[in-house]
Length: 294
Image (cartoon, rainbow, N blue to C red; front, side, top):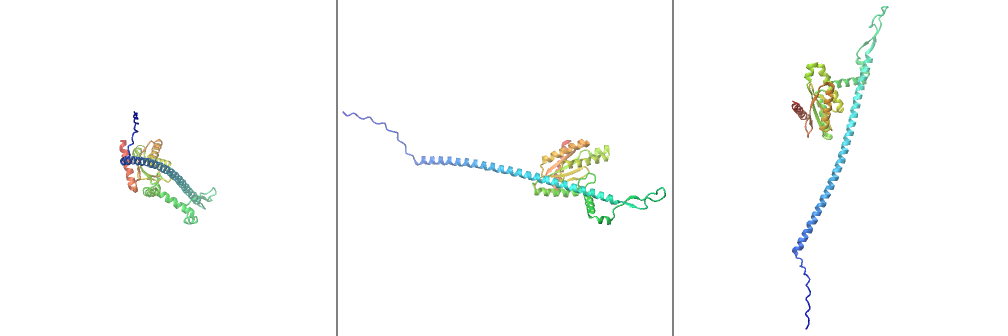
C-alpha cells in the first residue's frame, strides 16, 4: 500500500494590499513629511529671528555710539562757544577800562606850589572810539544781547526766550531719536526761607539751584526760570529714568548746600506733542508729586 504523503504545512498567505491601505500609508507619509517641513520652517524662522535680533542689537549699539559721539561733539561745541563768549566779554571789559582812563590837564589837585596836577579820570568810550574798533563794538553788543536773554539773578533763560530754546530742542529731538523730557522743578519752602532769613537768603537758594542744574545737565540743555521759584529744563536723547536720577542728584546737592530741596515733575515727549502740552503734563506731574508728600 502506498503510504500517504503528509501534507506540507501551508505558509501563511499575505493579504494583498488594498488601495485603501496604500492610500492611508501615503497619507501618513505625507503628514510626516509636512510635519518635518514645518519643523524645519520653524527652525529656519528662529534662525532668521536670531539673525535679525543680532542685526538689531548691532545697529542699536551703533546708533547709541553715534548719539554719544554727537552728544560729545555738541558738548565740546557748546563749551567752545561759552569760552569764546567769555573771552569776548572779558576782552571788551578790559578794552573799555583801558580806553576809559584818560589824562585831562587841569582836572587834578594842586601841588605844594599851587600848580594843578593832572590825574587820571574815568570817561566812557566815545562813539568815534567804538567805531574805530568794530570787534569791540560787536563784543559789546553780543554781551548786551546775551544779558537781555538771561535772568539777572540766576543766569537761566528768561521765560519767553527759554520757550524758544525749548522748542528748538524739541524739533532737534524729533529729527534725531525722538527722545525729549521736560522737567518742571519747584523749590520746596522758599517762602519760609524768605520769611525766616530774608530775601537775600532766598535769592542765594535760587542762584545755587541754577548753578547745580547747570553742573548736572549738559551745557546745551535749556534751563528756564519759569516763575519765581519754578524752573523748566529740557533734556534730549536721554531716557526719563536717567533724567530722574540727575534731578535726584540736584536735589541732594541743593539740600546739602542750602538745607532746601526741590520737587520735580517729568514728562517724556509722545508723538507730535507741542511744548505747551508737554509742559502742562510736567506741571501736572509736579503737582501730583507734591500731593503725594503731604
